[in-house]
Amino acid sequence: MSVAVQSTVSKAPLPLPTYFSLAEQSFSLKKRRHPFTSSSGSNSSCSFPAELSHSLPPLTPTKGCLSLSRVFAQHESPWTPLSSSLTISPSPNSVYDPSKHLSYFNQCFTNLGLVGRGCFGEVYKVQSKIDGRLYAVKRSAHRFRGKNERDRSVREARNHERICPHSHILDFVAAWEEAGRLYIQTELCSTSLLLHAENKAPGTDEPAAWAYLCDLLSALEHLHSHGFVHLDLKPANVLITDSGRLKLGDFGLLMELNDLNTESPYLKAKEDFQEGDPRYMAPELLRGEYGPASDVFSLGVSILELACNIEVPNGGEGWQQLRQGHLPSEFTNGLSAELQSVLRMMLAPKPTQRPSASELLSLPSVRKHRWKRRCCLMFAEAMLTLASLCQSVVYFGCRLLSPFNLPFLPRWTAPRPCTPPRDSWEGDLTLSLTTVHSDPCSPQDDSVVFADTDPELSPAFSRRVTSRLSLESTSTPLSGSPVHKHGSHVSTPTHSAIGDWSCHLGLTPSSTHSANKSQLHGERRGSPSSTKSTRLCGRNWILAGDTSPRSSLEPKNLLSLFEEITAE
Ligand SMILES: Nc1ncnc2c1ncn2[C@@H]1O[C@H](COP(=O)(O)OP(=O)(O)OP(=O)(O)O)[C@@H](O)[C@H]1O
Image 1 (spheres, rainbow, N blue to C red):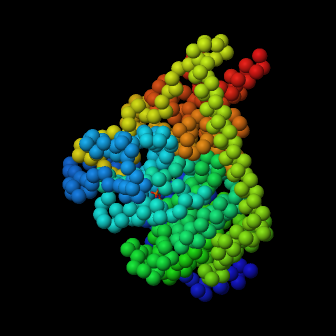
Image 2 (tube, rainbow, N blue to C red):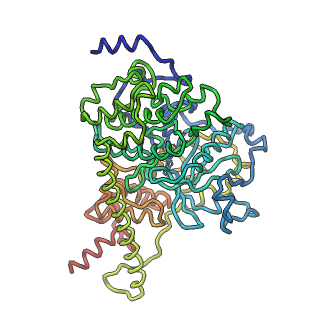
């Protein structure tokens, strides 16, 4: 059989995508990446591969001359709203005062820290000062160095805004430009599907793969039915909410199907269709053809990768074979015949042979799994809402009872802020003139963000990375189905507290998840506890080496407190 395969493959090799470099020739077991390097791995548009970005020494700060972006003042744009959500409504709802020497971001949000980084942007968890909710804000990694770079970022924001809301599409909130950078505000998720998959134990995970397939087919069906194609579908561009729901994001390459007939302002050349990640790229894109079937192919490759827990090749024989309709049997043999047959349909070499997203959703095998998936999500989301309610009731109950000094109630102290002591982007605009080092991809850039949060962390970059790792792991779920392993609701102000509560309710059995959260808070405040390790003891958090009684009321120990009272 392998002889037959080889002869077919060698007959008609496909042309390689223009941006192929450092091609990985065959399928291999999944590698773990550094969470704060580019999430897209070998995305061709990045200047260097993710693996290299953290092995190279950090760039030394430039002392001699100002970077080009600082010399040419045209990049120093004032705050400019880009989304209709900011231009139509009475935009910053009185929180923003343009006469103040503070950026829109700093006036309207509290920055709670870095949650991820891609080739083009850094993503921060923030709390809105307007509605108190938690959001993610993606800021371009550096000031625009030219029109093309700006166009690419603005296109992503405008594309995202054009999509009608859907339960499996990342919610867009707003976009604006300030000081030569683009900011996109979206709903906050836990992590990306890529990072989630990399934290899994090796081996196949078919139930999870069916769940991912159902969610992403729904997202594609929605996009395609509204006349759009994503053209960059891959696990790095999919996010997971705390309930485990998948959300398709990153609409930088989104195309409207009508754009073929009309004059598209952005994509014209054949090479423009090859901007996506070659590992997931449909073969017809190399000929400059695109359509909904290209997304179905990319989804097929993503599901193959996630189901078998493998790295898919970005070039060579393995890449060619996959585009000739040959699945890597050494990995797919462990999958059920049902899933293999769905994958075969999605990975058909000719776009006309591939079923559409809605046809796939109506297959009996998919319908069966979709029904189960809906039930799981409903349950997970109901539990999160319940946990949120319980938490609020207990919180307000304790606050009401605290004046009575009841012996079973812990002494009330104001909740400790979970924000860094200094707004990390404070002086974002003024810094542009005073800070000399400005390389977007170098770690020093983050010293602006994390400076003075912990004196121990400042001198050594490696420790700062540790800090960021713990930050990242607060939002990265552990192995297993995400449905049962996330803790908190995404967009309520009580996000982290709910997470701890749902941990008690069995939704988040990840001790490291919350442990890191605890560590994170310690590190951010620069308290002595930041260097102590945390461990889980029964239902209470103990700081190893910390023998002092916990005086503050924390949601983590409220449940055990109430259990003790009931027992008495
Ligand atoms: N809404 C969000 N909520 C939580 N985390 C997010 C969110 N958006 C992005 N992230 C995190 O930030 C990382 C980088 O984001 P993203 O991939 O959008 O950046 P990018 O520069 O566009 O990346 P790419 O290199 O794929 O173009 C993601 O992998 C994810 O871990």
